[in-house]
Image 1 (cartoon, chains in turn yellow, red):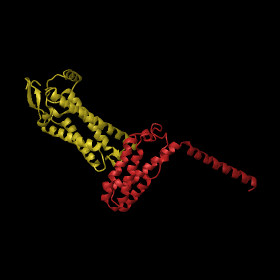
Image 2: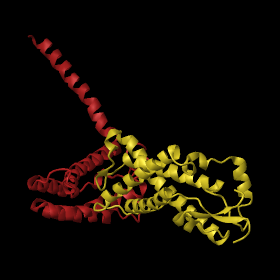
Image 3: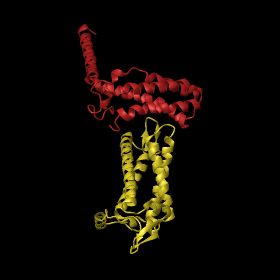
Image 4: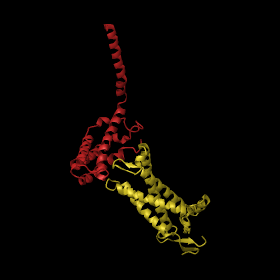
Length: 195
Length: 162
């Protein structure tokens, strides 16, 4: 490997398990929702509860967890973002011991979109399959319709964000010669020695 | 009572009745499209009430009762087979009656598949009506198709919001 880089353990085991659990539950929840049917709708709900549980865990880790998982570690300023974007196309690994500034932005967007999705889902109903979220009856039907609309829009937003995430990972792998997939499996990531 | 007083009382009463009726008659002729929209939405409330019971039993949220299931399924079968074409006049879509209906204009377009979708629902409901009273397993098996039948129109022909 090129000079100035080293392999370093970056991602802790809990967050790696968390990440892949989220992959499974989001993919399952999305597909079960998109292809919803009377026989599988209950599983869409389970996937939603599971995703919600993971988001609560992430919130707690972000507030009280180890330093590398704190939300403060996602913190970036516009200057850093600008300077990172300006050298984004360079064919060298980012070498950041965590998320790069663009990655932070993506993480924040995904966490927000998934939170919106889980919360609106709790209040949604499907009046063709006669399923409703556990909190649906606590709001008026007008509000419920608005929340369902948001739930459907957020599903598309999540699809695009996940697509962008995968595209970015492939871009790093092929263009920047940085394998972020094994990093999220083993926890070991290519990092610049001085970082 | 002399005849003049009687005539006056009669005249006042009659005119009272006429004045009482005028606004009613007026209302009936006022907005036939609005009435049609109200009527069809009332129809869907019936669908929802009957199907809600059947889905509730199929999901185990309402205890299965053969007689009730059979009644609900037969009622649903009756209401989905009513010919309610006159409740869907031109000009009653959600672009022309904002806030009153979620019926999209493509219901009335030349290539509308609304008739097919309606047939799919009717077939599914007839299937349920045939088995609803014979046990929970049969009901559970057949309700999936009813859900698909409802969804067929909701997805393509009903706006998400008013």
